[in-house]
Amino acid sequence: MTTYQISEQERSLLAAGALAGDLGPTPRLLTTLTDEELLALTGPDRPVNRLPWLDGLRERVPGYGFEEAVLAGARSLRARGLTAPEEALAAIESRDRIGDGSAVRAGLVVTGIISRRAAARRRLALRRESDPQGLSVAFHVDSDGTILQEQVSGEGLHHFLIQDLSSALRALHSLLEDDEDTDDSGGADQGEERSLVSGTWHQVSVALDIADRTTVTRLDLVDQAAGASETLWIARSPEGPVVLRAADGDETGTAPDGTALDGAALEATPLNAPERDELLEEILSGGRSAG
Image (tube, rainbow, N blue to C red):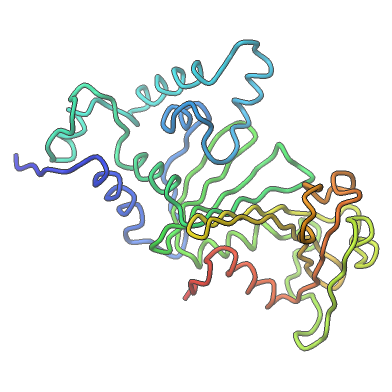
């Protein structure tokens, strides 16, 4: 059998690139990993994003730490066939062995996921303020414009999908829709002048007539290339969506949930639907066109 030489780094890059081959208009499910499995793959230092099941387990079981979680995750990965000895993987992938043949490595799909997750150019994480233990979603944007979507349930299950920018934007829109108001035609006319509203969350919500039960979604953006990060929130008023940011120099607030931001300074900007769509594309793509 013909084999070829390859380094571990080259294998990781090839695996990451292979995930995006022949993408259709809908996202493609790759696999699901548990908190423990993800920790075993990334190391005992906490990886990006949430580990809700593992955090709860550590609270319930005194002395249970990341080392125990790594051992449990590694055992589960082997049982599911997601990792295997290097010698077996080299034979399956028709390549020369990399280092110790008995060393356990991840298969190509999982290797691609971990590589994209670690090397993402931009990362956008969303969660609803009213349900901090519920579903959260992260979009890991690669340099080729394709996006690894990571859905994290409260049970610590990480569902990974691969998609293009257009598909990711559709998913982002659906995540931001209010369960009680999914009409996307609202908002002021594009030519209408809308002023910035400043104040605490209570002051802003009163000024813009944002109801107490309105869904507020937190968006945490990290731009690795620029070395910058930003947190903003999107709420809904009778006139359409509202984007909220912490005022310059104010770091006292963490979430507009009616209590956490009491006393914090916010800047709120009402948007119409086209402006909201433009903002979301800019946030997710960093200026790359969705096509």
